[in-house]
Image (cartoon, rainbow, N blue to C red; front, side):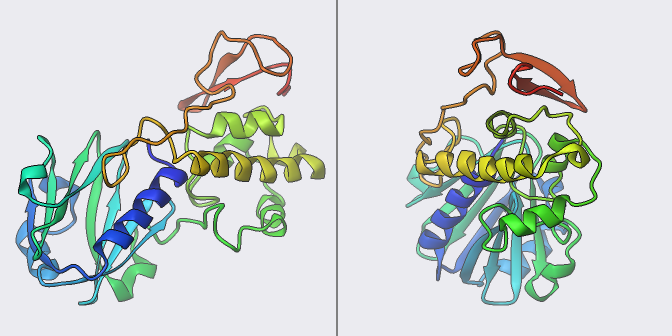
Length: 270
């Protein structure tokens, strides 16, 4: 599932490639992924030109020059692929956007995704995205901001970090190494964190996400041009039964809510 490094890379590539292009046609083979009829969707976007493509957490927002915005959520994962002409089309997709210069892009959801439309002026009130918090690469995400965000909270640290209303862009892929580098058990309560642990957690969030960015994002995810990322350097994530790189003890898993956590019980005591 794509998280901040993958979404940010894809968003940047889309904006650089598509800015100024005019939408000429839309093919939608899975109408349940959108919030209006296909007829209305086409009426509202065909003829519009791409102005910006930005992310809000894991959502990708494409704004057009006609006052409309398209909101894309990859759900559990998706391939969003650019093509120069129809001969380059992938075999499978649910959505195809054609531009008047004969280029375009396709979207193939792996499992559940959304392709919504909203008036750009109403984006701040769009129910799908209005409550999403800033992500760790936002300039406002400072250590002071992070400390104030955690102040008074009693929830478990993992569930807090995964809640997109608190911090956006972090999911169950990078969270294991983030908590390991910070030396924190996923079930430890935020109210029990020392100031030094909060500072370590803040540093760990940025280090793990920035390292993935430097490697071109996760190796399993494709970018806008079909190229895989280079990040497959998990420290303990998805390494159950292997030895902890710090203490040598076994990496184990524990059930945390609806997800599984990878950790070292020696380095991350509860």
